Image 1 (tube, rainbow, N blue to C red):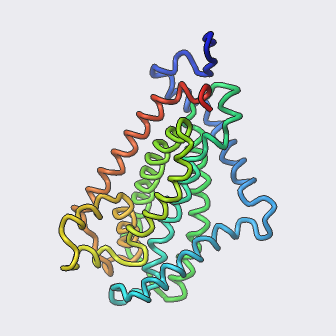
Image 2 (cartoon, rainbow, N blue to C red):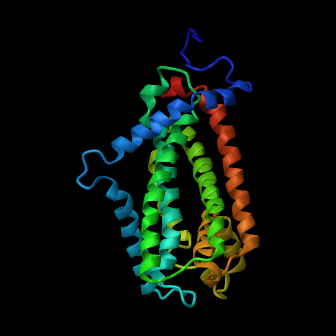
Length: 282
């Protein structure tokens, strides 16, 4: 559709229900973009896919050292390294998926200005690549559990649910920032700050019980802490992997779930609202 003042590449029916049918019909493009990103992610690196293991492994050791240095509480019978690993892997997935999806439209700007396709495919394809990285890095957790002879219980079957919740959080927040990043390029400087701040306020080097059971922390701060959607995700991962050795705060988890779903709804709404202008602005 050509306007005298600008050219916008968008389907005339994008405002109706056909958009979601198009999303399914263009699934081949989704697979292609994801496969392309997998091939180029570690291209011309000496160790290739091993970076999927080395990056979270370095974070695990740093968080383990911080937890040990400040003597954070560790449930009885649980190695500190396992407690940290069960939190680092979902955090690493969120941080990478959020960062990549937020920048995905800018990185693929040449594609957005040439042909029509549902723009949701671009950020979602980057999240799929990060999911593959997460599955590869899960080897770290398995190795640590074998080394410490730690056997999970039946709660491990709930792990896919918390992984889906992590996906919802990553995609929802990623869509919001991706749409904002097209119009306001300043947001590319805000993304690392959000990730760094989130690392400090998420229970990675410590446990949520350190927050909720502390008499020194005011109640309003505990409520603010529970609003972090990654708190529920990480606590859920630990509960699944470590079983009854770590507490699970169900009411506060529901708050995290509500925040994650809210982010996804807002992200989809705002992304769809701004989508028709991407080709013109970018």
